[in-house]
Amino acid sequence: MSHAIAPTPTRERIDLLDILRGFALLGILIVNMGIFSFPFVAAFTGTPRGDSMLDHAVEFLTHALATGKFYPLFSFLFGLGMWLQMERVQEAGGAPARFMIRRLLVLMGFGLAHALLIWNGDILFIYALIGLVALLFRKVQPRTLLIWAGVLFAIPVVISAGLIVLGVLATGLAPADTTATDDVMALVRNLEQQTIETYASGSWGQIFVWRAVEWLIVLAFFLFSGNALQILAIFLAGMYAGRRQVFQRLMQLPANERRLPAGGVCLAVGLVANVALTWLWWTVETTSPLAGLPSLLLLVFGPVLSYGYIATFVMLTRRETWHHRLEPLAAAGRMALSNYITQSIVCTLIFYSYGWGLFGQVGAFVGLLLSLAIWLVQLVISVVWLKRFRFGPLEWVWRSLTYGAPQTMVPKTRQSAA
Image (cartoon, rainbow, N blue to C red):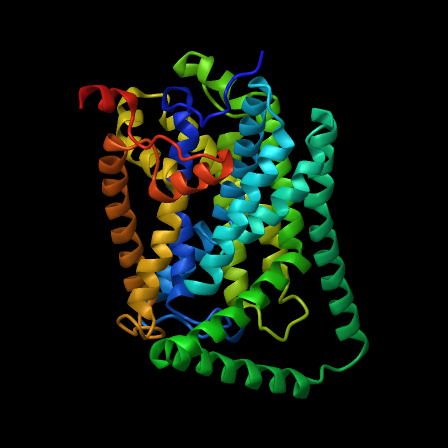
């Protein structure tokens, strides 16, 4: 007997996962702030966001603790969420694949609008695209799912390592010719300056065109670099965790027994390794054949630290006191789509010419303060909003389009009271 397919009731949600989403929103904003406020090509030119010691310290810590750590965390949660939703549809007698395709296509629409009309650093379109590929693995056995995740994760690591070795060998066989490198760097620096001028003082039309071009470049980079394969691998790892009911079983254990295997080790190793690779990233010359080594290490140790973060929150939520303190993060996590898009709207209004026009003028330290302020305000708004409504505003649109009917926005208890 089939039942009506509907969104997961609040009482059936796993709070820990929402808390992790709320935490990830902060990390993603801190990393994205560097692209909201500064040209993304600065990663290649090495132009710092500010000249003070505080700016340099924030840049270092952001790279060590946040860059490459939060998109793996969000990717894992996304894959896990996909599986839980498909499982729920299956139990209701629906068609999980058809449901998820519709859901991902709606998300792709959000991503396209976000990328072209608001900000070029959109990840939603990419997640939806890779999510459609992940659906091809929905019927494989759990062990096979894990093997595929491992293979896909290893491919970009092996390719990157091979390219570094080839670079070292080539440098040893022939003297380096810096002329071509200098020409490319001059072109990139000119591009960097043009980006600052466009976003800080260009018209809306100029910004639209520039943003679209940059988005296509970012999209191509993700799809044709190791990032897409790594995201797919982590999606599959999340689906594996959903299929094995890892977090459901974890929550059924007594509080003092809830822990993830090797969580403390991964946290410690991840912290040390990411500080070391960030130092390497800062010290290796861009013309060196080892310039790609920090990026290679980040592919490995970024997700290691992400796992350490997850394990840390598992430990924190064992105590009722900490669980209560972290409830605002759960509210923000339940409204992750609305909060993510809102971050882009607020930040582009701060930095683009049709707002305050501060693009290229804000250092890393001030950017961190802005990130914290925006995130804290979102926590408060999320808590207040969800006391009155079941979903965030964009979550309501997403669900309504996915289920093919407007969803009830006000909880039944509030409707009865009214």
